[in-house]
Length: 300
Image (cartoon, rainbow, N blue to C red; front, side, top):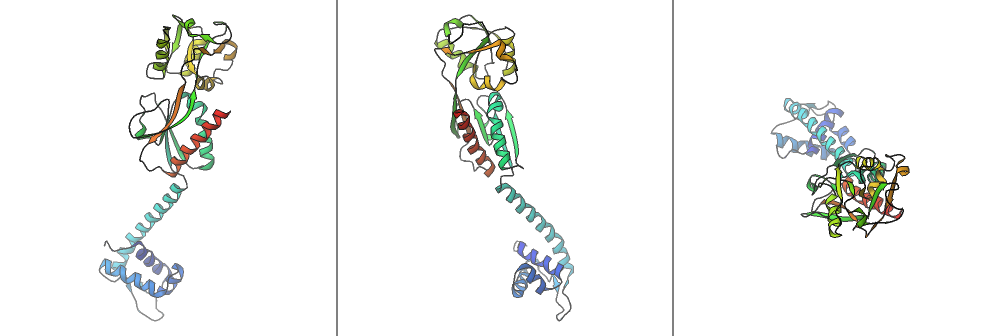
């Protein structure tokens, strides 16, 4: 049975449907002798005749063995056609791509990427995974946006520098840049240590400044809502401030954004993907588009 070829089965099905070797040959684009050779090869593989050939004008008829072979052969042909169709869709980018992301990037950069990707591949399946883990689970995803490099078999592509700024209630500090020393012992709203907060606190420590973190939350919107309520100020990347600006509505009336002096080192945003893995056409295009839309964001 290992010698049965899908071409043998397709030829057999065509003969049954057309009623003769000659008409089957015309339908398949073969010569009649090629059809006969295909049937002979099938009969050798299954160990018996699959057609009775009466000769003359009478049509060929399928044998009992042939009916068994045809029933299973049609199922195999159907599966082969389904696989060929799935492969065509895969090559056309109509598969699934798993993207790891985080809050601020999800609201600013990711919509641009998803819009471009769906414009090119309307039937693609895009699945997003937003987890505050350090380091991220790159092996489980096709591509990951992350604010740093990670160890292991991971490809890195730096996308942008995201500078930090101080956001405070309007009037809490004079207009313009705020010196870090002005934040010593000042109440602050912050992220938990699982997010980007350790970098912020290390920058404060290097400057010899010790603010008081009075409230912590993983939600960017909650951080700024607490600042609006007068709980404290916050040091956040610019991407965060842009991402929540529309959500907060009239925040500009009550909040002010200040540069810090000296400035903190910017947060570095990278695109990561598993090294040595063959990417699907959809995942490979997603990586290209992520680079393009981020470059355009930087220019804007």
